Length: 319
Ligand SMILES: [Mn+2]
Image 1: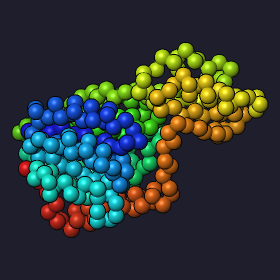
Image 2: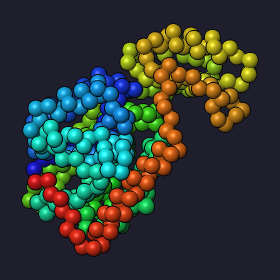
Image 3: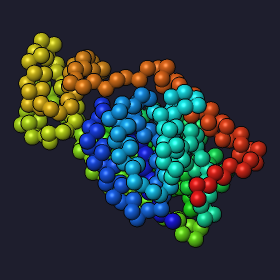
């Protein structure tokens, strides 16, 4: 049995939909060699996806016949009971959507699918921790041998001992500048006669860049050589308050037309960026939204643990 594992697609017009489409196509091409696909949440970025965003997902799902299991992520959950993905199983009989973490047992291998980090996960610079109260020993106590978890955008395989491995496939492309040095991947799981092997396959999304220059020494030549679809964050350090920021910004934006550019002026003697300007500003999460996400996942974990403690049969096998 071969399963392809991915997650955190964040399909959104605020990123490059064409690129997302291209990367999903690369996954689709590989699926001919697989029996199942697991998507570990955050399929859409927004809780109100646009028609263009739905179209990207539908184009991907169309004509796939293998069983697909989706775990809703914090970005997918609209309200406690609803997700932006609820309609999928009505259209595609091969798709199952779960609103919370799931246990599966395949050929005797006990697997947990979820959308959160554990205490031992390495988070990216901008990742919000959900459920660092879940740690490896809790998973181990539950007899889990393999935990496949979305949410964390940084690919990682954490092997605690022979009996327990946690894998975060990471995101599909570079979502924030904290991820710029990561290799993006999808995960290939092979289960054979009660044992499993994990492999990773590289994805090659358009890189994103972060430059830091002293304002007197901006490397304009380097900026003018960036790919046409590049996303760039430029931190400009300055120590003379009288610099002409408008003029500097204009020159950079002229050089980088068509690219997504975030310019941050950083006064050398201060600790925080003084002002931020951007062609496309990414919306900031509100505190309430962050609270909601935390609460949402927290309740599902409590439920999960309660059910395990009650010895309830929670094997919701997909096969
Ligand atoms: Mn995510």
